[in-house]
Length: 217
Image 1 (cartoon, rainbow, N blue to C red):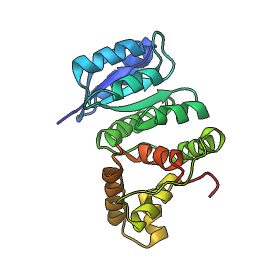
Image 2 (image 1 turned 120 degrees about the horizontal axis):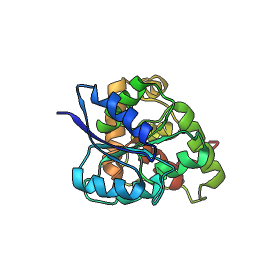
Image 3 (image 1 turned 60 degrees about the vertical axis):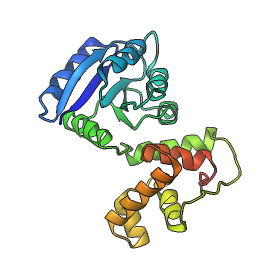
Image 4 (image 1 turned 180 degrees about the vertical axis):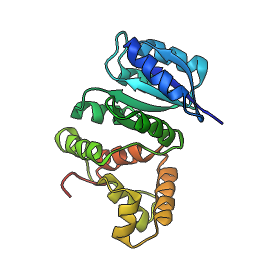
């Protein structure tokens, strides 16, 4: 089945460019467009896309507010934030809003299509540089809380979650813990299920906001 995509951006040429390119992909179907955040919320309710490409700076309702509203609904789509601004506060707020990924608009067309596939599959799209900025933001803005205990999470799963929060990939975690990559993926999946988290992005945010992991440790 094709991945149903909604493109939300206030620049008509950008929307058209994304739509034209993604429509050439055999497994992606662009089902609609939106010129502002309010329209994006409305179109999501009408069209039930699998993935929303969401610009940050839009009139009427910005992309971060729109993301929060979209993800508060039952069975929401994945949201992939697109922006020309490589700024810390956007990374932090987009992921706290529940976005599954963050991609700069100057990414290649191939990278865009792959990003859609990644988030549609339930994975988070977090480049190492983005994760580092997110961690930096938690160090600067994140609340100081007592270290959390995770009921039902095993010691190994907690160890894996800690490494995820430090920005390591499954392959890097596997090498660090001398495990197979598939075993690491299984541990990550179990952590998400036990903590009621949607994806890797939420896991990173959860780890820092609960105090399980602290910047610099």
